[in-house]
Image (cartoon, rainbow, N blue to C red):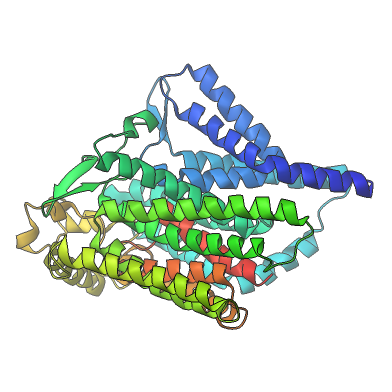
Length: 499
């Protein structure tokens, strides 16, 4: 292709990428609308597939946008059963097929066959550099093998949702060199979306029936400890807080970075006027998403999310302090004052409205931890993926549940509310090792980027991951679809900083 035509194509592709991604999301929305004729819904899916061939990155954007909707799958009625198809899974599988088709088509167009020897060498090199991911996949397979008979179907489903598909997503993001700005933008928009749904619920307007049918037993608005808590698109308010605590620090850091670019901290080929318009719009978008996500954290009334946001704010403030240390002092102190106000506000909420750190479900979680340790002493390799429920629930005859939990909502708990115990229960010691290696790599690269290169965006990813780990001490860390996708987004953001 002549050089000027290639440049024109690149500019056009960049200009139309956002529109294509939003149209692809609209196509998925059409497919998920159960009241429409099936032919019309399948047309939307066909259009999504066609666009994924042209813009596979747009397909991955849709994976991120729809990951929080895992409890609101599209339904397709066939003569023998009703198919439940999570939208993020549909988007990921179609995008995977599109990327494979493009790869095969590229080789056929160039009239050359793939070099099997070179491919084998690349696989070997990748298996060494990506050893933690390989270990995680192996641990997931073992987790399926350990499943009890009545839980085998759940184990296979969760293996697909939580191991295979997140790793596939991560591999595709790397394969198509998806930019970190695109990843963060999609994550920020998805967070803003679920936060807005939660905020409307808090003021009495529930929009979730317009999105789809939620496959959960809980109400969309519940009253706990005398406060009104919202679930948004999730089954529990804590899930809303868990997701948004990962979103807002990254969106806030991206807003700060794009604002800094607008004021000359970064060289680009764009004219000053174009650069200012682009940066102003991007900074406003990310700042709005960060504020909306923080609002969602507040109305979730999750003490864990509040305190995790305090931790994230402290980490983000330290990163901002390093980033602004060579710039205007007034801006540095203004940013730190904002962070300080957030820390004080979130801490005050946690210590007053929900009864302090010693109230609520602390005793129940201690009992769940003790129970999980009993199971792990009996089964050192773990229980298997999504098998805690089949041991914990007395109805299955394997339970070591504390009698005080019987008759409460915790009788049906599906996880032990601790990241280490949850990981060991699901994927065993091999999975614990795999996640440990990924996190060591993440923190090593992130600290270098923040301390030496003073990258404020990486500081946002560092703050988000630290918040996730902090909250994971008493709740979920990875083993639900949206948190799994967010985990690999954060990992990729830090890896992109190296390039």
